[in-house]
Length: 295
Length: 266
Image 1 (tube, each protein chain N blue to C red):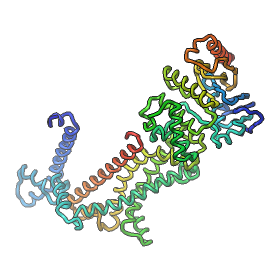
Image 2 (cartoon, rainbow over the protein chains, first blue to last red):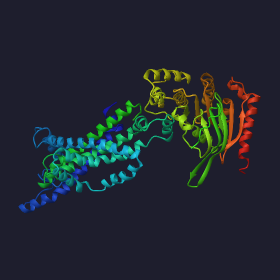
Image 3 (tube, each protein chain N blue to C red):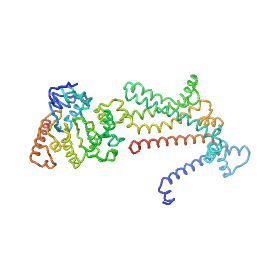
Image 4 (cartoon, helix red, strand yellow):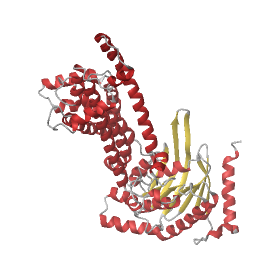
């Protein structure tokens, strides 16, 4: 198949068109948003500025209102490839700090969420008493509760990775609980009746019917959970005084008006989230394939 | 809760059995004053329109529903004791195979739950898959099989732990006529080979007459027994027996029974 044919009929063509459209819009806004400052500068210096000069300048500011895509890409390249990964100026270093909190929080959140879901489906009392709290926990803005968690845990001598991870846990356990309650309750009545005719124990029903039935639900929830785990870890880095992590880069960037740094940290976070969701997706397909069910 | 009445040697013995469901629209009398004896090795069909309680009665035998009055015994025990002793295999309307298990793993499910050894599981799986003509399909997943094959696999699963009693709730209801004929023939063969007692719920008059040694005709609102017909057909039943005068005569009587049950409804 020729390249042009694939571009026209495959997925690549449309994807490229969308990216190109975003780029055009982005550069358009770069000019519009950064132009006032350039005009202001020219006015102060008492010089006039040509339109082509103005456009060129808007894409090369040091602290633009909106950085141009190539500036963000250059910054990303510079802070990942050109810096030693142990350096505090390396985005890989900061990315790893955030990633480790994300993963720890996600694992704890998933296990905790499963545990609560198992309790809820097996005990009516727990369903009535715990579920409202689970829902209520998510109505509180994470920005409000994150500093509390950091401060309280610090007071009992916990600092560093774990408090940040627990903020990830706080966010990520919720979709797991909701998904697993639904998943563990997904077996049909006749599948449960069948187990009843065998006089199967609760544990056997759980292990041989409820748990496998819940697998598709678990992985779907995990995709949501891993993405918001990352949000949790970033938010958790804000009140710690911006020491390290992508959240710290965002905060430091906003302190000093380093918009290029902010945008590159945002892109790094987005890429990280996309990568994590993709890994969960691959695990999902592998598990379903092993279970003989087409994903 | 029903008390066991173990006086007779019958496999299933019900007397004055009633079951009323309490619903939001008031009580629904699903079963009323059922008196029935089923002997060992019989093939009993329950036939009647929807809502006549035939499935409910089967579920009472299986301890999936609990009667509100009267007594019933299964192998001389209460249904609950019988269930705990794994006295029966149950075949549902849908195959209800677990999609993440291969056919042989599905058949192994009751054996795993009952704690059979691996060697015993393997030997039983091979035997029952052969009984339902599914040799060589053990490694397939349910979605790789046709509807008729799936239902055969579910019958194999019900046979796997060698209960003497087989309860079948419209097992072939969702299948087309040709597959159904074939499975009916196979079921009779299997029944002759294994000497089990079979309770079989169906909507189809020819199916009931073809398979049964005894036909229980039921009528709805409240669910009760309208007629019990002992089949006079011979043990050996080729498919074309369905055109014989004797067959048509029994079918006629079943139809009469069904009509009588409907008569006073208006």
